[in-house]
Amino acid sequence: MPYVPVLKAEFFKAIGHPIRIRVLELLSEDEQSVSDLLAAIDVGQAHLSQQLGVLRRAGLVHARREGSHVLYALTDARMAELLAVSRQMLVDMATATRDELLNA
Image 1 (cartoon, rainbow, N blue to C red):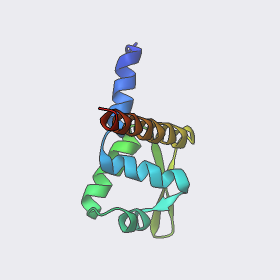
Image 2: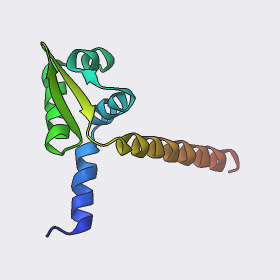
Image 3: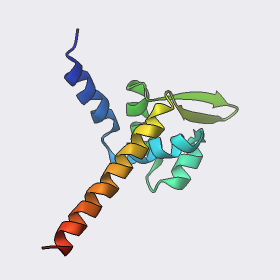
């Protein structure tokens, strides 16, 4: 059985790309079509498809077809919580750094 830290590293590696993070943030709000994602993210369709494939293979998103559209959604709503916590941690870290610089 794989070692838990290795599994965690693989999980975070799947998340660890700016476009994939943005896709996950958008999907945290609601299910999105590929065209919706393309409109919200400044990236070409081939690159977006590649990143969606990484997320799909990692089990982080799933796709369903509705007519001529492919709609993506998070497989686990807790991803939204993880993204919110990481955002707050970054804000806290930036605030601490700013405070250190102001007090130096």
